[in-house]
Amino acid sequence: MRTDLKKGEIVALVIRSHWILLVGPILLTVLGFLLALLLGSYTYIIPVLLFCYLAYKILERNNNLWAITNLRVIDEFGVFTLNSKESPLDKINNVTYNQTVWGRIFGYGSVQIQTAAEIGSTTYNMVEKPKELKDTITLMQEEYKRIQIKSQAQELANAISKSSQKQSKTDIATEIEKLYNLKEKGIISEEEFNVGKKKILKE
Image 1 (cartoon, one colour):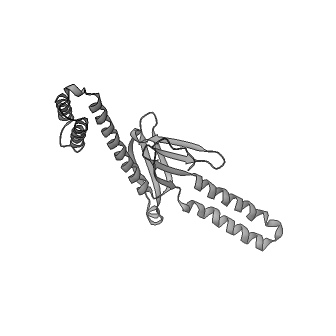
Image 2: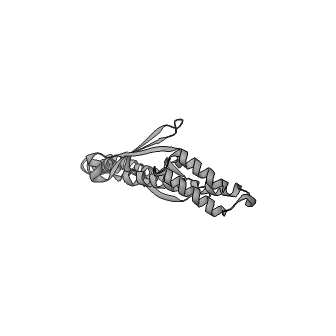
Image 3: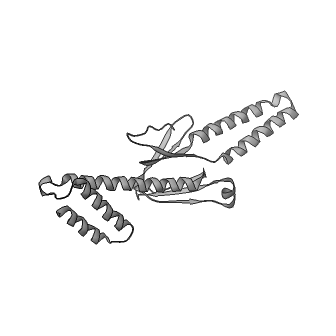
């Protein structure tokens, strides 16, 4: 991976295009060598050119990757140049994947990431292990939200004056995080969460 990571950023998964994309160039190269053997030395330029094409496609596959970190999804591509596109985890609204019958047999498919309206939807085709890619993005989103909730709860606790505080800052952060988890599970409503949060902060 050629994209520089941010401070505290950790790579959870790196996925590339499926190897099946190389089957065509490999067959063409083999046929080119067979053709050169049959027709003579003057035709050896054909397999040489086809071999260069195969080498390019291998480099292209190695450089065309998707990296999932604890902060973003990085889409990196380019052989002689570096092109990088990223989707922050907090901007991703939905992730889906699709596999045909052949895709299920050979382990490839397409993954679609729907982000905020201004960014739109992006589809990655012929991806190896599409389910793993989708599941890792979802897992990293959940981890990102958990860390954000904990951070925000701690900031709320730090903002409260020590003189008016009956509980420790850690206790307040923990209680607010518990309330939020209850709301996420659908046990309490948004209104009940807000009422509970105000009550904790007033104690």
